[in-house]
Image 1: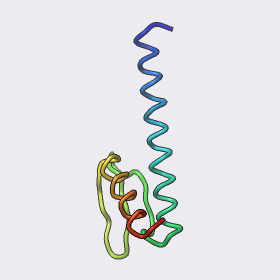
Image 2: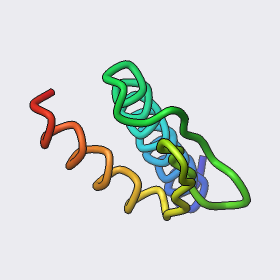
Image 3: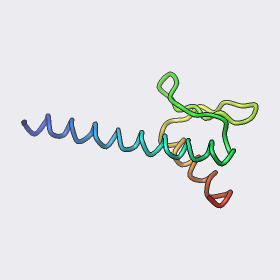
Length: 74
C-alpha cells in the first residue's frame, strides 16, 4: 500500500468514527426525548425536533447535540 492509499484509508476510518459518534449522540438525544429523529439527508445532517427539521453540517449537528444533551444534564 503506497502512502496516498494509506492516507485515503485513514481519512475514511476517521470519517466513519465521526459518523458513528454523531449517530450515537443522535440516538442518545432521542432516548432522552430531546429530539424525535436524526440522520443524513441530501448531504446534510437532519435533526427533527417537535414541529421543525434542522439541517446542518455533521460538525454543526455534533456540536448542537452535545450542547442539547449537556444542557439537560445527560
